[in-house]
Image 1 (cartoon, rainbow, N blue to C red):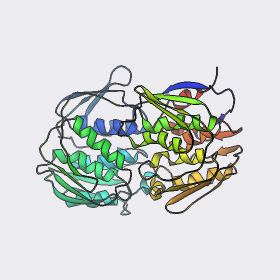
Image 2 (image 1 turned 135 degrees about the vertical axis):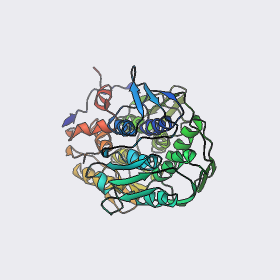
Image 3 (image 1 turned 30 degrees about the vertical axis):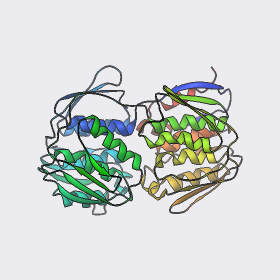
Length: 422
């Protein structure tokens, strides 16, 4: 447990957040499939990304850490070794979904398993898509969720349709393996995708590694087969999702906070959270070295968050301090995250005396005067980091299970302490 104390907040500070979790996962996989040695600078080393590193290691990919957060990945040009033991990946949904597809490039049978919560997170739409292109995959509990068993073989390719109403990661998984197929993939998206910026990030990584993708919006993607991920040196940009917590802190405290290393032209959708705060009344300043948010009197908004799902808990906390009722739409897929984030957020806001409720597709928060509470995090890093922001202005906010931030931002509490005057 950690108690957040609402006093002596700096009127202005600059914050550095770690490398993007989403980019780190994708660059690691592209490097593993590349034709040689890759250097990855500013990689995020967290619980989730370590699961990806360990899993790739079990598939025969050597990954070494040098100085700082630099990784050296020895690519095997799409040729993976068999894994004798089950591959455990905790509650990293990105690792599970992307590597379920990657395992289809290998030889032999791969078993991918995780936590009890992972065993409730959907993956059937990806299984259905992979089976269309000849990869044999099954949900071992026959419920459309992990653990999964994948029987790898040479990937022929061809046409494939995928339902991405629940997760864009199904599409990203197909895109990442497509260049390693014989005939390439012609992918049709039948529903969705939600979280579209994450698809853009995947295509961006592929482009950086020399792989071409022909796309028609978010409906159809064609990737030629027998392409090569090019080995080289790559840099992971700062994490836009992690930046959002500190911009939110500025919003509720009325201070100025600059997050360095983030620019408005990033393909990370969560960078747009700063613009959302501007719509709520904050001042925004974009510079070449970062984005600054200055808190002002906050007003409620009505917003579609389908492309920024990870920022929904943070927005909900900010909305608790805003005038009026904030309506957050298109968030049905949050029920299948690290926790049921809709129910989790509502439960904890109500503990703080805030009028909050949700339906299957909306989260509604009426601003008020939050009071102290012990915040249950449900093992969900984003609940912990978002509700910590409330404690900067509300006394007696205690975050239970504070170590869950290890999943994506191991140094969060240290960076958070930097908001206080010493």
